[in-house]
Structures are given as C-alpha cells and as structure tokens.
Length: 81
Image (cartoon, rainbow, N blue to C red; front, side):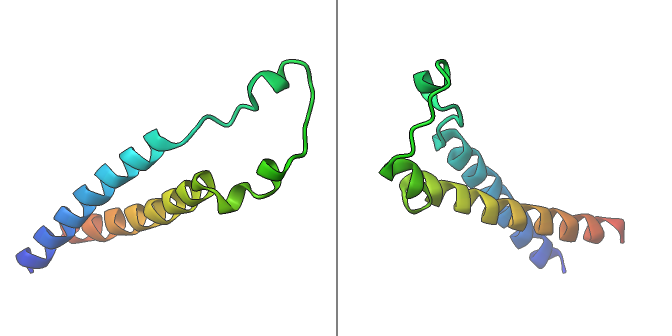
C-alpha cells in the first residue's frame, strides 16, 4: 500500500509542476489596447481561438486541474487511515 501511495505522490508532484508551467504559458484574458476604446473586433482569430495554442492550453489546464483534485482527494482519504 505504501508503494501505491508513493507512486501517487510522485504523479501528484509532476501534475503540480505541469500545472504551474501551463498556467505560466497562458496569456492574459484582457483584450489589449482595443479594450480601452471599447471596440470589439470579431475576427478570424477570436472565432477560432479554441483551436489555437491558447485553446489547447486552456483545455490542458482544465484536465490537469480535474486530475489534481481527484488525486488530492484520494491522497487525503489515504492519509485518514
């Protein structure tokens, strides 16, 4: 049982590191200088943003956060015994 806990802890640490790196790679959610004047440009980039690198980072962050919470709950339940 200790071997499984050790493996889960190593995976948990790797997910924490990966989550930190992915969050740091993401851009800010501000619209840039166009938001100062209130202009909202609907462009090809804004319509297809989910298929871009930024969209991939957002989906990766979501998946890693879900795994992070699941692993933290599993490790916490194991610590109560």
